[in-house]
Length: 215
Image (cartoon, rainbow, N blue to C red; front, side, top):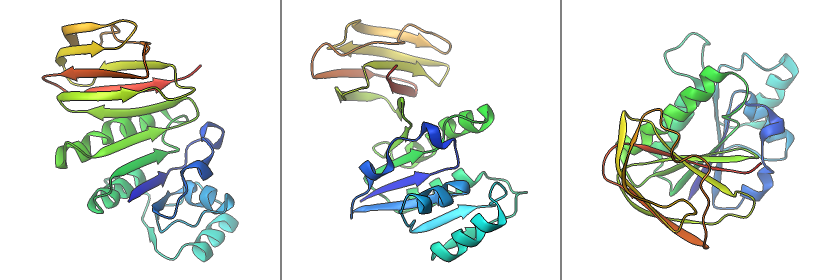
């Protein structure tokens, strides 16, 4: 089972959502993202939000179109996205995809990136990825990983989100590395590329953000 979460980010940054719609996938709507799902003919299994960004007519459509609607006051300790992600983690899916989490307000975007740490704290193997038209973003804990080419996503960047990522090694890349230190703020691993269909990366300490991008 996969869970797809759609938040209320700019719709022009969304990939084609129907590519990710299968009978095995569960859709979760977050705030304005609920209306976007319904507008694309996708009925979310569950919805979260304070819905302060939708019109009265849109809210009426949401209330009619969603069976399980969790509405909150705007004044709360968590963002709508955090509440939705918490629910998704509890379902223990194989993969959580997050759409509509980029663009718009920078504070929300940074918070959404940091939220990717939450599932890793529960289960290091849990896969949570942020998608938009030009990027795929995910975090990894220490270990060794394989990474395959994806058509249209030429560039792969590795960024530390802890004070340091230790022992990073890149194999099968245009710019290989062996047991390097990657301190917070380093741009050493920006815009790398795979030279074969599959490469490998590993590191021994820290939390690493991986960004797959296209121009």
